[in-house]
Every structure is written in C-alpha cells, then in structure tokens.
Image (cartoon, rainbow over all chains, first blue to last red; front, side):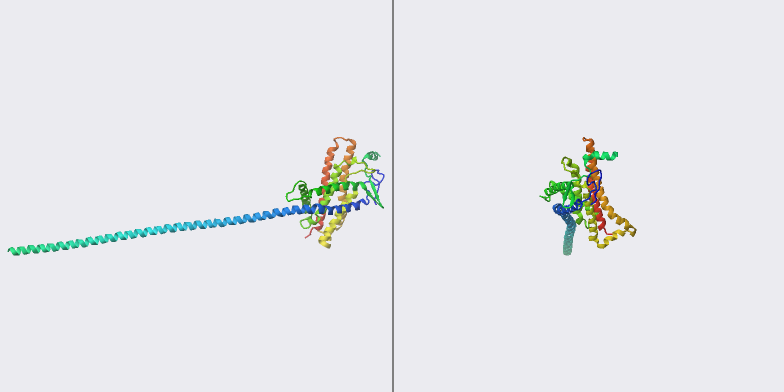
Length: 153
Length: 241
C-alpha cells in the first residue's frame, strides 16, 4: 500500500491509502441500497402518488370545465332558438290578428253596403210604387173630371 | 526549516495521524469508520423517523424529506436526463447525502473533545481513502451506465465529435476520479486545518466566521460532488446524433 510520511507524522500521513478505501466503497454501496429502500423508494412513492393525484384532478377539472362550457354554449343556442321561435310566434299572431281585423272590417263594410243598397232599392221601389199610385190617382181624377164635364154638358 | 518547525508545533492538530485498526493483514483508519458510522447512523435514524408515518398531507419531518427527495430528483433529472435518471437517483442521492452529512458532521460536532489514542475524529471526507472510494464508485458507475445503456456504442463517445478527441477522452477517465477525490479531500481537509489552526491560535470569536465559511464550503462540495457524478453519468448515457 502506498504510504509515505507527510507533515512529519510518524506513521501513515495524509495520503496513506490502505484497506479503508475498498471498505468505504463497500459501505457506500451498502448505504445506497439501504437509502434506496428506506428513503428514495417510499418517499418517491408518496410524492409521485400525490403528483399523479394532483395531475389527475387537474385533468378532471379541465374536462368538467370544458363540459360546462359546452353545456353553456348548448343552452345559449337553445335560448337563441327559443327567442327566434317566440318572435316568429308573436309576429305570426300579429299577422293573424291583422288579417282577422281586416276580414271583419271588410265583412262589416260589405254588410253595411248591402243593407244600404237594400235600403236604396226599397226606397226606389217605394218611390216608384208611390209614383205609380200617384199617376193612377191622377188618371182616376182626370177620368172623374172628364166624366163630370161630360155629364154637365 | 522554519516551516517544518511551525508544522511540528501544530502537533496538537495531529495532521496525517490515524487510529489504526489491524484486522488480520489489513490496516484500517479507525477514526474514519467511527465518525462515518455515527453520522450515517444519525442519518438513518432521521430518515426512518421521517418516513415512519407518511401520508398524502406531509407533516413535520416528511416535509423535509420530500423536499430533499425533490431536490435530488431535480439534480439527477437535469444532469442525467429524463430517460434513465430514475435508475441513478438513489446513487446520486446517496453520494450527496453521504458527502453532505460527512462534511457538516465533521464541521459541526466538536469531535476534538473525544480523545483517541492516536489521530483524531473528524469529517470522513477529510480522509483521502473515503474520497477516492467515492470517486472510483462514480467512475465505475458511469462506465456501467454507458455500457448498459448503449452497449459497445458507448465507446463512440471517445471519438465524438472527431477521433482527435480520443487521447483527451481517455485522459479524462483518469482526471475525473482524480479531480473528484482531490477536490473534496482538499476542501474539507483545508477547512478543518484552517479552523484547527485558528482555534489553536485564537480560541475566541475569530474562528466563528471561518467556521461558517466552512459550513458553506461543505454544503457546496456535497452539491458539486453529486452534480459532477450525475453529469458524468449523463454524459455516458447521452445519445449522440
């Protein structure tokens, strides 16, 4: 083994290399296995389990968020379509009522015109009847006058 | 020589002295193992306390451990890449924790109060054996990572982008462990020496800012070691196009 005096030491010295070296190496290798089973594996399991748990939760939350957004968009489109439907129904109803109003107005107008016409015709017929009667009476009267005049003569 | 006498005067620092354990034919630096067992024991107790009751809502120590785990994962992921960082995260994390605990334990605990027959307790990373062991493990790891991920195509890395790079890339395989081990060893030892000398000369107040600087350096060195190890592994598994 390499050994020489250094700093005036009687034996060994700073660079005294002996069986301490391989034994220390074996000790460190043993320590690696011990620390692996006592420290690195158990702590690693716990930390990695937690990291997995957290990342899974984040993924789940993201999925839920996207689902919520999709549902929100769905509802929005439904709302939109409901609104347009409502508008359509309102305008339809307005048209209908307008139509009905116009129809009723026309009907009433027609009726009024018809009764006016009827009244006019009646007035006309009555007028002509009265005129006929009048002319007949005038004839009768004139005949009477003629007869009386003839008789007097 | 003045310098030599100055150094021998610092015998109180006991630089380069070790507590030798003799097992059969092999000799070990006992103080390195003692401190590393104490510090790693504390680390393991801390970790088992923190991971005992783990729930989905982190409480108390679990928060700290999860922060640490996350920090190491980020380090490994940025340097090694999304594809294989999982395989190497325990190794990078162990390097980081080992170096960090050793550096800070060496700086924060007043080891000097415990008297040893020879040498003194201190940061395990202030011993060249420890840092070379770590650096060689890093070298083996990046070779293994490259070969297991890309098979023989790993050696394309040596002629990438041109074959002129071949000698430099081969040289790099030697300089990587050398720089890794000596950087860590030098920084931690220098910090211990500076604090030791200052405490020896002026035992009051003056060493405190240097101690804080030492804590800062210790943390940075742990980060640098782990980052470079991860970077070397990442370089080995990277796909060239």
